[in-house]
Length: 413
Image (cartoon, rainbow, N blue to C red; front, top):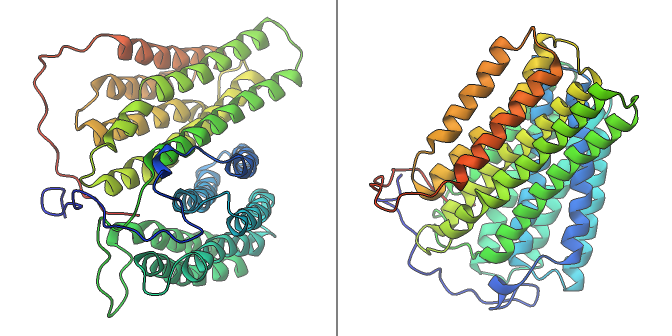
């Protein structure tokens, strides 16, 4: 169903504020220190995911790392949507967030061996986070008969259905685990797009979610900063463990420049577009879901891959890279730029050709870089990122013809 055929109402229906929910000034509220504390666990988990990928640079290893990242992101994402509604200065909410932090830490500990002996720990921690949070939202933070209870209850049921596949996958071994967890992830990720349907229940209204946009966009910006910070940590740790010769120093500077370019491309060039796209009340929840819930996992994935690539280049600056390592080095900037292209398209309805050309340049670097030193490949990719940032600084012609709106499928989270 398209934007033209299904729109949110001009303003969301009134919400009765419970004692655990944010007040009418929610849009002006900033992220609480406890939320930033919670993000520290996510930073550790990002490091674990990058190490998982580095330990097995094969297509199977990449698939396993993707499954783990998607699960970790989904647990953080739903917590962010929950704290966007709840008041994190209330003690019951604080206690729930601290409990979720413990579950997230267990999840992170299980990541390196999620497909070995710690599969059940990974699945159990993930399910405990999702079910525990929404059990609280349903029965403690929402009044009986309220829209909030209906929403949280629907999501809770869907998590329980997917949980059958999570736990079963944790109990089996080999390729069956990956397939069962893929089914579970498919259920988790598809549910918001189909309005969390249940037999005999009416579909949820598109405008029934209340969004504190200032807090919401800040939270996702902070997690991008955390992910980029992880690339800095990787760069520093890898460089510190090696002899600081000219090649290593050059690779270190290149990696740092790449991290700075990622920051620039998100916070200077793209972040404001996403925020401004939420100013319009019509279908705001759908845009928030598309740009932040789904779109930002690709942004974070690109940053993680970039950190992996930086570590490879710093460790082998003069060595031509084997195909697997070369793909890992190229994939980070390419995925980041592709994700930015999709986010900007969703926010502005305009095609940004500079990023498409840049993605093609990254792919070309991978195709012809097999015989080049890793340092030269990495520096070329950083140059591509910098060129895109410079293109974004060029003034836009105000008389350019506006591209007609695209028909995009939207639904709330």
